[in-house]
Image 1 (cartoon, rainbow, N blue to C red):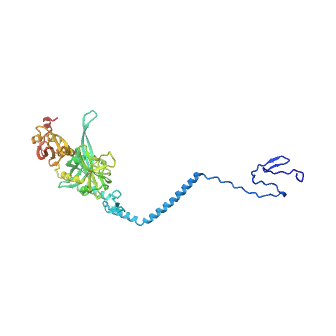
Image 2 (cartoon, one colour; image 1 turned 90 degrees about the vertical axis):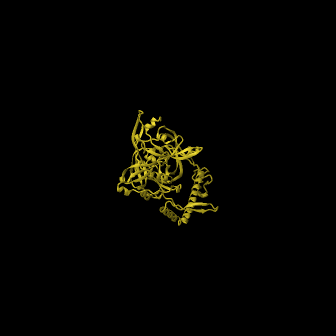
Image 3 (cartoon, rainbow, N blue to C red; image 1 turned 30 degrees about the horizontal axis):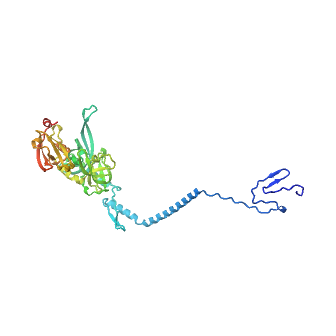
Length: 473
C-alpha cells in the first residue's frame, strides 16, 4: 500500500498495471532488459538499443556482381594492351600503306611477293604491292580505249509459225559490240562474235560519236564464234575518223588468276557501259551445243550481259586480252562471264581480215555443193582416228560435188582458202557464192586404217533445182 492508503501499482516482467479504474496490460518485448522500481524512485540500469540483424545477400546477386567486376577488369587489361601494341607499330604502318598505294597507282599490274622465312625454313608470302584495278579509278583506261569500241545492230529475218501453224517471217533487231582492230586501203575492220552478225540482212555500226554507218561481213568462223566486218572508209566522215581509235592487242597467255580486268560493251543495246572484275579462271572448256566444239576460255566475274558480246575484255593497261561472248556463258549463273582469249583468236582474226569482202547472194541464186554431211569434232577425231572437219555422208548425182569427184568418206577442211571445221562454217561461207561460181575445197581423203591425204578440189556450185532433181529428199 502507498502512503495515502492507495495501493501501489506493481510492475512485472510483462508490465501489467492495476488500479482502481481497472487493470491495464502492456505487452513488453523487454524480456532481457526488464527494469523495476528502485528505492527512491531511481532506475536500476541504462536502456540499450538493439541492432537489427542484416538480411543475407541473394546468391544470384553475388554471381552477377562477380561477373561484372571480372568483365571490367579484363576490358581494362585488353584496352591497355591494344594501346601499347598500337603505339609500338604506329611509326611503320602508315609508311607501308602509302608505298603500296603509290606502287599500285604507278603500275597496277606489278605485284611483288617477298618470302619471309620461318624457323622451319618454309617461306610465307607477303604481298607488298597491290593489284589495284578492283579498288582503283579506271577512268583513264576507259577514256583511252572507249573510242575503239563500237555498237553493232543486226537486222535479221526470223522464220517461224503462227498460232494456226502457218509459216511466217518477222524482221527483228539484235544488238552487240565490236572492237576496231585495223584498216586497209578502203576499209575499217571490226572484230566481233559470229552470233552477233549471224543471219543478218543488214548490219550497222555506231561509233563513239554516235555516227552510224552500214557494214559488210568480211569473214566468219562460227566454230570460234568470231567474225570480222568491214566499214568503207569513204562512208566515215572526217570528224568521226578523228574521234575513233584502233585497239591495242594484248597477250592472254600471260594472264594470271586474280588479275584485274575491265569489260566494255553495248549492254542490252543501251549503249557502251563498263564493268570491272578479275580473272576468275583460265582455260575453261565449254561445249557450244550448236557446233559441238569446245574452246579454252577466260572466266571472269565482270558482268557480261546480252549486248556485251563482241566487246573487249581489257587488262589494266587497256590492252585487249579477250573478246566477250555472252552466248557461251549465258545468264544462268550470276558472276560467271566468258571471253575468247585474244592469243588464240589472233590467227583466226588475221585470216578473216585478209579475206575479200563479199556481199551475200540472194537465196534464190545461192549455190550448193550437192552433198549431205556431218561434223567430225575434235573428240570424235581422236576417238576414231579421223581429221577434224566435215564428213561427206552422201554425194548427190549430177551435182557440182559429183562432177568434181567428191566421194562418201571425204572430209572437208577448207572452203575458198578458209578453214572450215563444222557445217555452220561451210554454210556461212557459201552465202556469198552464186550458182555457177567455182570454189576450191580442201579435203582429206583416206580412212582411219591407212591414213588420210590432203587434196584440193575445184567445185562448180549447183542450184537448188538441180539438187531437187538429183533425188535429194
